[in-house]
Length: 299
Image (cartoon, rainbow, N blue to C red; front, side, top):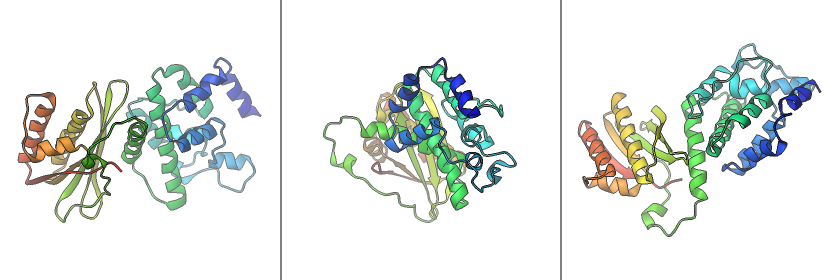
């Protein structure tokens, strides 16, 4: 009852309709909305909550040191969780108060978040943090922070694209392929971009070797309104730059934009924004020991 009273006090000035509308109006998969509803109602089975229900579990989780595993600590205050929120485009600096509940933190965001698209990314990152925690608990497997970020960006962008009303597209863009490793000695660099509504584009890059090991990965955002093919070109240029800085010079650069891939393969340079970026990519490619370009459909 004490926890409930604290949460009631925190929400006294915020209409309940606004609290739930922020969740139900987000453009994310239904499973994430259901997860969000359970989080808001504090019904997620973290160890601290299970211990309070008199279940025989150790409320202190080794992943968090000697601290009790509470909802706010697992999803926001724990060191790695704190980093994810701070480096994300949301730029959230989480209060470290031990008395802060998740609901209190969430309600403060309801007041401060003005852009609806921020909620899409918020819930996808939160979902990724929960999956990361579960992978450690049940599989003793560590998911890297960058993978949490890439997955969250991907969920936002792919869900938006899946809900767009599109006309008929060419066969090359309808092909869906599975990822395959590069041949021995080469590194496959996958570059992708997601256009958000608030004049922001997210760039994602993952580099793997022939045995599927991740050699490097990065994600970042750029301000500006870009066509999807230009955003894809920006991602490809960023990917090639990071790969070369990492010492990877035998590269298979894979992208999901067939138009961009065609221009790169055929050395087509034009006087345009896209043409300028294509020229940059081709120049960087000329500095590599070997480079190939390929197109892969969205999965």
